[in-house]
Length: 119
Ligand SMILES: [Zn+2]
Image (cartoon, rainbow, N blue to C red; front, side):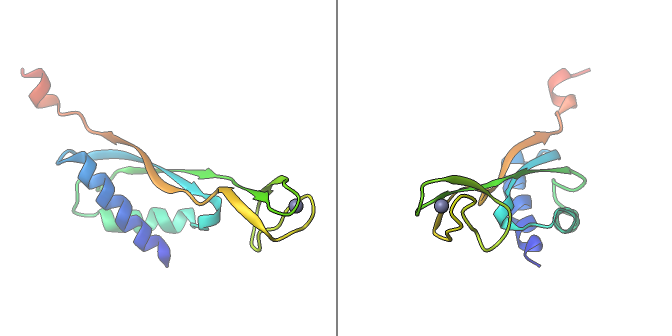
């Protein structure tokens, strides 16, 4: 289950950026070609986040559709599944343009109310 390894790195990245603050939301970009199962990733994320500053954070996943450029005919097509194939000529020689992304796009952190407002 490679979702567990992905979840692990997400939690590490988020934790590092949060710098001790509590993370409330993690926005993730996932390329279609990564073949991540969202429910499996959400489950792994919850598991790995336990006991860290990321615990309880909402995981928002945005899927990036895969597109490729054909080296045979030059057409750009949407890649839905493996094997990757050109939609125009049926060739298999493609350069992937999008769809291999996997990164944390944004984080939401809990505001440190006590320190900034001082009652
Ligand atoms: Zn083609």
